[in-house]
Length: 548
Image 1 (spheres, rainbow, N blue to C red):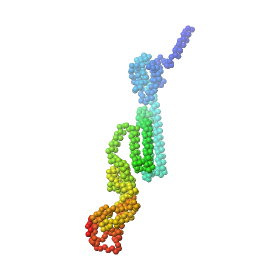
Image 2: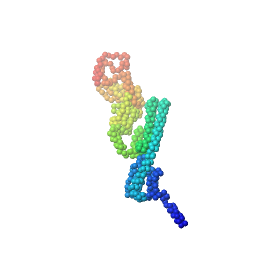
Image 3: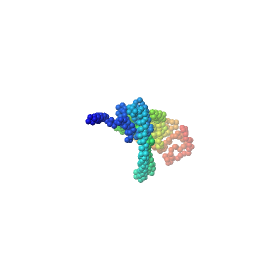
Image 4: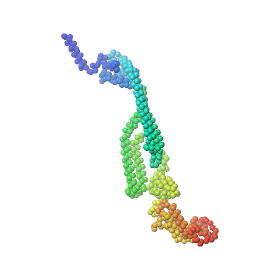
């Protein structure tokens, strides 16, 4: 009975001792905790390292073995030992698989390095065995996946081709219904046939683009199936994903600057619109500013608009992407130098155009004379002035030339004061000046285009008393300078008719005759019917002939 009691007490002590032990001791054997891989015990872990208990070390080793086996580039034979003061470590590349401590070696009654070499050999054999068992399965699986991907690519390309064949037929049928050519303001850029050709060409280009994209996306998928080509797959994906990722990141980071640029632009835009409204009101005469002429409104608005947008660009410039890069700065300097060297003449014309605008020497439609050129103003821009002569010749004159010379404006005071047209005739001393005045004024009054009001009557000035004749200048008003050439012609015709009817000879150009019976210088239609011309000898024509 005593022996039975002692046996029961021993069992109780053993049982209570195990129940109070840590959970890890339940799986402990006399050799430690096992490291199991594929139901095969590789080795045992006996001691802890720092805060890591044997169970923690076992879990870490199992996790790392699983991670290494998933890596397509892992080879068990590439594992190696590396000694340190505290342990001998088993490494693969720059990663530790597990460590062997002195306590582990003491438990196994071996040196630390010998135990590490033994465990390394066991791990290599187990992992190589697993890789060999998987190699056939992996090859079959990879081959199956490759065939599947190829079939998917084949059917994708097949149906892409069918889709674009359908779109080609649709484009051909759309000729004349949807494809009617491209026209803009009466000009036909493309007729129906050419538009169809362009559409079919774009359809073909788009088809090849889609096919190339599909192939480009399929190749990394194919390469990723095989371990030895997965690097190529990453590179191919990187060629697309990296730039796309960089672009998206740059856009996202640029949103605050974009918001700032938008605010500056819209503020400038609405300020310019307000200035444009004021300019329109001034031009129409609704808004009157003392000393500011309505015809200044439009060019002034153009100047203010340019200055406002130039100021806007200066403010926005620092917010533009790449504005602080040397390339951007170099391009800016190059454009500045190019502009300064190549546009000195253009700048001088622009400055002259600005000065002419505020000098107001003429307006659109005015009859002017610049140098030896006379015509109507067609266009007045910042660079040039265009006029049209009475012969319908369009002449372009640089504004610098206009500013450097003198300009005669025939239109400015024509409506209010009237433009005075003048012409000179020379009459002999034998004709009374009163009669000449009367004939000239009657000629002007009968000429079409001459003003006949009381305050703008034609008048005659005797400009010189020459040796053989008197110079009479006829002055007549007109309110239509654009027809001055026609009015001059009408006046001259009337002068010829009136003087011929009165029997008065016009001594121009410097006509002289010997009064020995010569025929008078009057058309025969105006001579009396009973007039008999005596015989005579013409002395001649010339300047300042003597009369005998």
